[in-house]
Image (cartoon, rainbow, N blue to C red):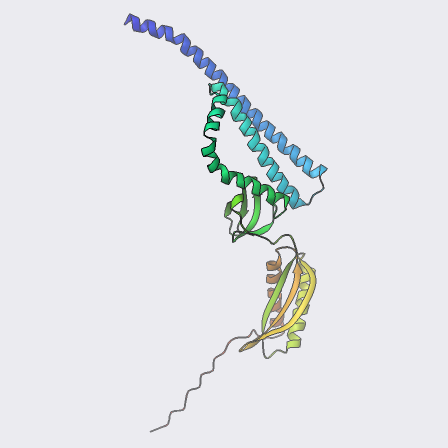
Length: 283
């Protein structure tokens, strides 16, 4: 028993020293982490100021570069932070790097997709395939671009879900936001309304939409009657709109068309079926 107490008494100073050393290293690691956070915040502000003040770019192009550069800064600072903190706890970075060199061939095969993501991300940026805020179709998924990073692209679909794509997996992109859109207005009219009257109403309504909706850029084209149906005929027109705003312009146009036709007492066409029963002869 006395020998056990003596051993504990001898171990206590070394345990105290180890605890103090570990505590100081832990405190230093926390300080390094806080410094990294500060560097990232200062770097983000610097990038924001540089892109806003020093470079003359479009808004979407500026937002895209901001997203990409801030992501690169974050990854770089965190990587340096980890390499700085690990030696504090006795982890030999040189040995890790040497081991990584030995295992590099095996890891390299697994990292091919990661490298592909980064290269594709830079090509997307420099070719300006899409940018922040653009409405796009990526691999059959339609949505608004909310993040462009060196590795992934994120789009938000109209129902709110966010879909992430590895840049290397993107095979096809359709961008609706780089050029004006065309609103195609197709409206069915009953045969009791003359075509000239219906086309005049359509032209009048499109003029109102052009004046009321800032998304309507004008250039109205009345295409005329394009189809004869069983109980009605179809008139058609087009109007140039701001990128990816054709659907809101169409909705407003249809709403006004319905009201104009009702105000003039023109009822919407309905399909009607006439059934003729043969007369029954009395026996």
